[in-house]
Structures are given as C-alpha cells and as structure tokens.
Length: 165
Image (cartoon, rainbow, N blue to C red; front, side):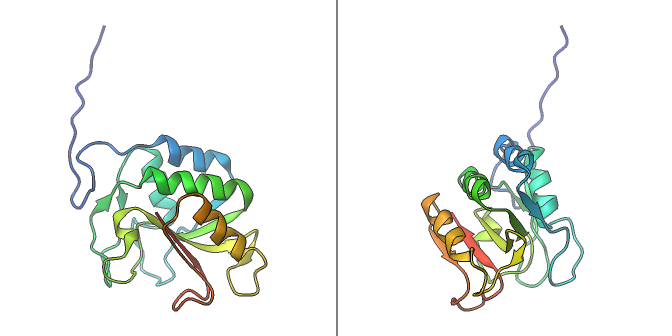
C-alpha cells in the first residue's frame, strides 16, 4: 500500500489554510445551466475571471481575486452557502455570471470574501429593468439564503444583479 502525504499551504489572502471545498462548485458546472465570463468588463486580463474562479473552486483551490482598481489580489475559498444558492437559482434559470471573486468592486466588497456573484444575463437576455426574469432571480437568491440582492433600480446595478451570502 502506498500513501501520499498531503501538504496544506495557505495561499496569500486565502480565507482557508487548507484546501477549499469543491463538490458544490463541481455540481454547478455539471448542472450545465450557468455560464461564466472568461473576461472582465474592464478589459483587464487576469486569472480571476468568473470562469477561472468556478474552475479553481471545482478543483479544490482558492479562487483568485483581481489586483487592479480596488481589488486586493490574493485568493479566497468560495463559500458553500453562495455556491449552493447559485446551484438552486441556476436550476430554475439559465444564468451567466460576470464576476465571482475577481473584478474591481467597491472597497471591502463581499466578492473579495468569496460570498457574492454578479449575474449579467438571465435566460439569454441581458439584465436590465426590461428583463422579465430579473425580479424572479432576485427573489430566488433571497429564498436561497442571500442576505443582500441588488439589481435594476439600485445604484450601480442597472445592468447586473449582485447576490451576496
């Protein structure tokens, strides 16, 4: 019998000293109803896009945070509560996420703590006040444990939803 030693290393800025849970992120990917941007709206290229974040989390790694604008850099484990919420909201709506832990948000944003995501489109239509699904997604986030949900009608959220656990 061969055994392998596991070395646990805390990544800079990580919320966890050990490997991050991965099963829920993998379930979100395998569900196949949520897509993820592989770029930032800012145009800055880094390893902290929503697509890279979900793949990092599914691999048991901390999600990279951007290091431009107000973003602190480093990495953070994505919260299971947020990923569970995403899974259940995604079971009712086809979502496209623009940001998870990356991007430049307001200073102290909960994205940087791994407990928030931004929705850019719902059922193939961009988020706006004329999207017939945006209020349903906002309510679904709340029903699945989100403590803060912002969207059209809230300052700075005319074109996306912010769902935070």
